[in-house]
Image (tube, rainbow, N blue to C red):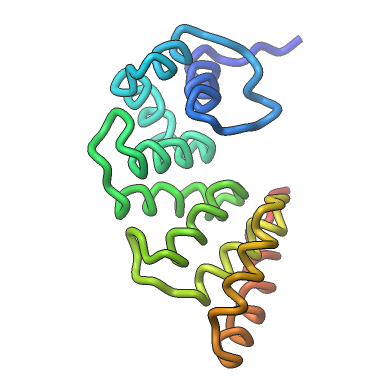
Length: 163
C-alpha cells in the first residue's frame, strides 16, 4: 500500500478544510484543524509551498485563499493568476472559477467569451455547474461572441482536458 507524503497530505487536508471536494481529500490532520479554527496564515504557508511546486490542487486552493482573504490579503488579480496555473493543468474547479472571474470581471477584464470558454473546459473535465454557467453567458453574448466562444471553447477543451 502506497502512502501519501506528509507535505501532500497536509496540503490536501487544508483544501478539505477550505471546502474543496475531492475523493482524495478524506483524511484528517492538524493543518485541517488549523484552517477550520481560522488559522489561515499557517495553512496559507503550506498551500503556497505546494502551489509553487506546481501542484494544481494547491494552486487552485491558493487562488481561493487570495479570493477570500484567508491567511493573506484579499487580491483577485493574484487569485486569478493561481486559478489560471491550475486551470492550464486541466483542473476543472480552477477552470470553473477562472470562468467566473472573467464573467464577473474580478481580477481580469470582464469577457463573456473567455468566461464561456473556461466553463466549456470545466464542463469537459467534469464540473457539472459549468453547464448552467455556460447557458447564462450564452444569453449575455452577441451572436458573433457566441460563435467565437463556441469555436474557441471546443478546441481549448480538447487541449486542456485531464488525462
